[in-house]
Image 1 (cartoon, rainbow, N blue to C red):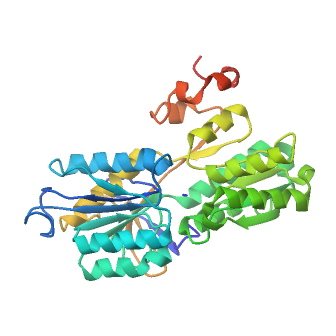
Image 2 (cartoon, rainbow, N blue to C red; image 1 turned 180 degrees about the vertical axis):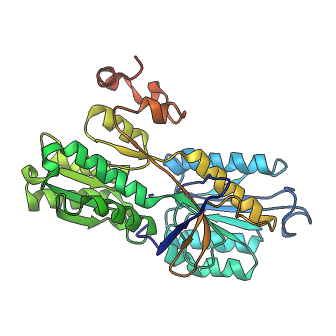
Image 3 (cartoon, helix red, strand yellow; image 1 turned 135 degrees about the vertical axis):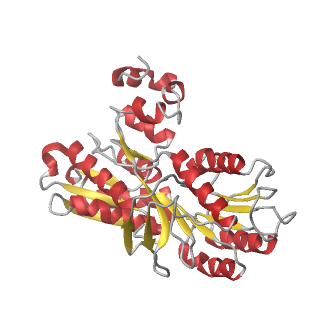
Length: 372
């Protein structure tokens, strides 16, 4: 969800390592003898890592990011016990979780902020407690020691470029709807700016919505409103910022019996989105290889917890509304269409052909050449 981000500047430099972790739902604490860190855990050599993610369960973050972060932390700290996990998408609850981890005395935090502004006071409290914070996916406000994310400008540009390709002749002066993310999420603005850098001057933006809370139900209402206001026949494409919103857009289009469906973008490579791409109701999604992201976040956290520099991990620096020159890892993303599903999410082990191609979807998979 995936930054209109609190990013006011991005500065790149060539360094030796990259990786990162994206995310959603979870408060997680690892404690144990990992060598090096402070003495807030069970002994002088212990290192405890707290991880807060804004989603879990069946979400991408619960399915992929959390286990990958846990796996890499275990590799870096083999004697650490299993993680304890708490998941929430509520800003106030996440702030309580973060405060609890500070009270517990973790050595370092990985935080994917539900609402960066709401969490700022807790990030400042972490600094007062000498606990470094690695911002994950979303750039939290306050004193951040490291940042791992996917380059939001690239995400937005890829979505816009693929949308224009799918629109064909209508890309020259056609009309689209923009279903952006939540203004509270700094990533949402980043994606939006990247997309507009491609779309402006090419198409007319008939309606543009900032979707409160990234909630699909809000996206559905907004898309229904766009159809009523513009007329179904006057919507040539929809730039939906993520796959949940893309699903809501498709549902609204179907409810209004719009045929043919205009091309719709997405992000996160959710299984349902991949299946919609196979069916033809969604044109594309953005795939973010989660493992390098998780690796980078875990590596930054362990280095900071041990009092080490993260310069060899960072690929550049970023500025937030409250801080400057934050060491950062900015990872590339991949546009996924029906033509490269096997070469991306299947090849990387995110999904199997059997997971994608249910019996109901088998004919569509055959037409797409999946599993043949």
